[in-house]
Length: 131
Image (cartoon, rainbow, N blue to C red; front, side, top):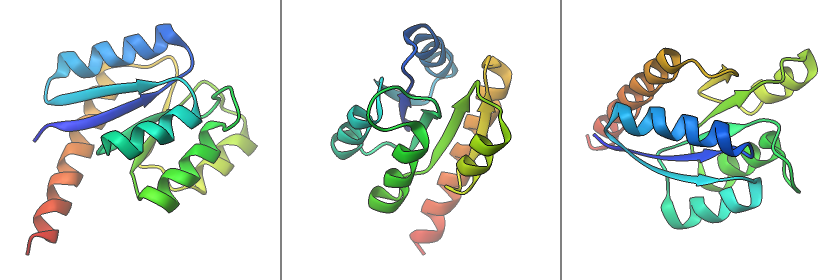
């Protein structure tokens, strides 16, 4: 099963690194956005299976606000990526019910492992919905 992934990261170097890891792992189609507004437009057109979302996005919508809209309007699962580990931010992030929170710097092994878990969850959900 190929996953459609949207990476939402405002740091181009980190965005490209994550994209490289995901593409090299195979079984994925990747789109990118660098702010919350563009992410929501991309979700409308691309309908990703999962969104990798930086908590500290610049622009009008931060990652947590973007996640709330993703969940409420599109029911799109997401994984946070963050270099911010202060208690308040993480507690607010957890309230949006992400699949997982990955910490920066991104570990290639952890990201690949997370994608395998996501792939299995989505496949299980599709099988249950087809019954």
